[in-house]
Image (tube, rainbow, N blue to C red; front, side, top):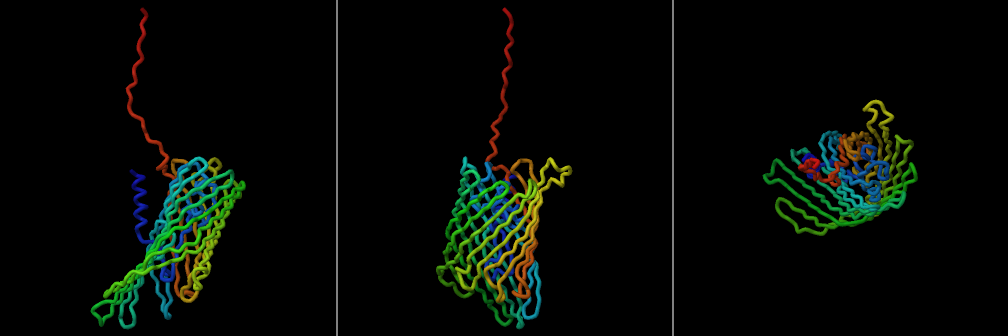
Length: 401
């Protein structure tokens, strides 16, 4: 019953708003790269980390490194502070965020492995209200969400893992505008609702060489197709065809063990947005992290047995805001609390993120997030209890004739 309750909380969290950013008017400012909460607390690096029960399957070859059934999920919550510098006037506002970044299941079948992952691929949510000089009130709202569902297959041969996943993208881009003028009785309202979907494929490989693991995975470009419909207070237009292009995404990764207790990881991701539009640049992200995984028998105190990690990342967003491109910097740290089973664990992490610059973009985000991740819970592979009370017969007493 407790397991059902925990899963219900995370599924409900997926229906709530999250991923807030003032740059949502210009594109998808927040993007998840398919890693789990453990890796998010390590600078978002670790898509080739085969030295643990990894539940992040951006690289489909990652699902093949354990003979256990794994379940993973997480939640991100916190605050985002907006800053703006418009016409010499500075404004600040703080908003809360809540998001459900991923849910994954992976099941072994001999040397093969089957998996499923659902995650929030990219988000952008923001509301803005301003009073003009003539006392006119304007409200703007943007709600962008791009989801991704993966069906994953992987195979291992010695130290090489190969994987392929079918990816189904679906999402929406909804915008609302309202204007209330003091000299009018009917407000101005306009809505633009867009939806889009389509499948693509991701290919991946991870090669282990002792204490070193090298990974590569690529998601093929895809054009998401759907409809766009504009409505206002007075009329409703007919829906028209709409397309949203996602470019090729390529990620190179490395994980290495310095010794039995310390490892490092780095991921480099690239997306060719310049092939989509001349107004965009190619998006790049560099993530670097380090983790300390103590051996229990070497530690005397309980607090010295807790695994810790930290990392940084730098990302170039593809779009402009205020005439200049937007950059993002992130600092994160995390710990792991092992639970009673070997594969069960609780990952906790914090993240500080800065996006944009007042000097170049006229806008800036500063976010502080708390991340909670669960791995294991053995909800699939746990054996059914078939024991029941039984009547044990008494031994017969044998008497001599």
